[in-house]
Image (cartoon, rainbow, N blue to C red; front, side, top):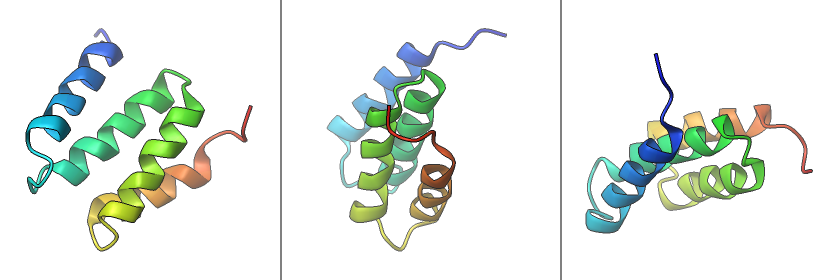
Length: 76
């Protein structure tokens, strides 16, 4: 099993760019944050996950983002 995080991040960004108002947008943004965290891009992950909670506060994605934010390593 390979982990193409860069490819996945690109795909999530494409969804967000082309379909920013889609019902899939919160999930795409959440998964982008997960991908950034997996690549140890913690400041980017923190920013993306925070954006999920701000833009989509009542979504399941926002709840998951808030949980993941608590588990990210401290600022480097």
